[in-house]
Length: 178
Image (cartoon, rainbow, N blue to C red; front, side, top):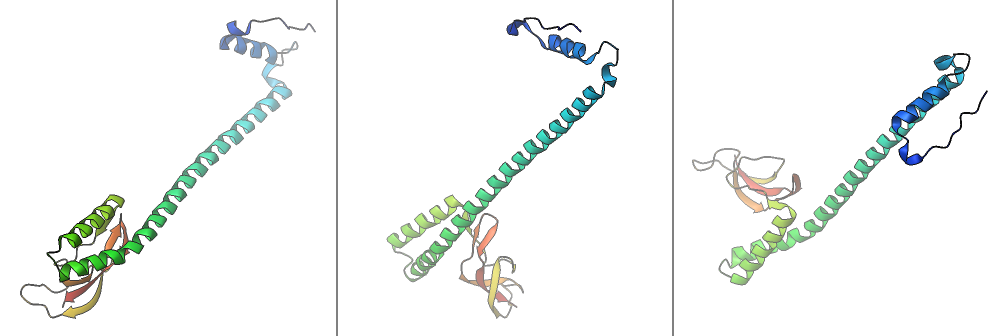
């Protein structure tokens, strides 16, 4: 059998040249071609390795997504835990505003803290006049319903509730009309 080695300029070889070379290598002098057990075995190995490669790429992508989701969850939890530490400060400012509503310093400080809360995604839960929702409100007392307050409506807010995005950080403590 004659050796078909020849020198080829790498820059001028095209895909069609490579296909022709592979086709020439797949044929044998006896005409067995595709029926050659070695070729079939190699094609099976190529298919297996391709499958393993595709699975490894998919697993890597899944791992990246999972890591990104976990990092986001950790950051969100850390942010929420830090924000919870500032809720008593906001409660104290609200109490101070109720005692001295005309104090410009307290008003300014309360606005600054509310603005900081809003920038990181913390919002107050609206309560007074709303129907009781156990997901957002914690009823600590009831009062008889009258013509101005329908039954099961929040009459008074004792402590403000807050949400961080779509998560309740602290439910509002409220008085409900019955």
